[in-house]
Image (cartoon, rainbow, N blue to C red; front, side, top):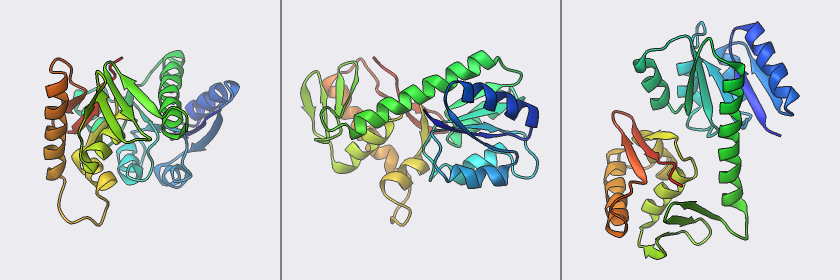
Length: 231
């Protein structure tokens, strides 16, 4: 099963979640503060449950620190219900936001859904027989590095395909322009994240020419871009 890291300073809640997830067969790591959470996150868990309101190093700081090197889904837990906090969590690279108090059943369902999505992406990215992802009429062939819409090949540059690959492997996850730039171009690249917008614009234009009525890559205003879960 999966390795799940819980970062939260509420010991009773951590114990409850740990017991529940271990009963489902998962391996559960725990951290009761942000600093410990950062260290354990670098062991590359399959999913992180991250509380926001922790002393000294809060959940936002933890996410900001680890997001560029830890790609697994991050589910924020918080008593804060404002839209501003939700947007901030997503902007930093979070995949989901659950407000306390929450239903254990709902949180478990969200965890399992994220893990299923990640497992499908991993399988599609590594399976030698059929490394393809299908979204409605669009197919991403990870082995041949090709994108087709309704069977027609879409001519993409290397960078354009790299962006499509990154986003399509994590449908529903919001990536900022800075995150995309660092993952595709690298930390030491000369230039800035503004080039990401131009590449996404070109990808969309090519997609729209082949299929004008479906938007596979959406803009999350003030944050970045997300691949839509279109089936």
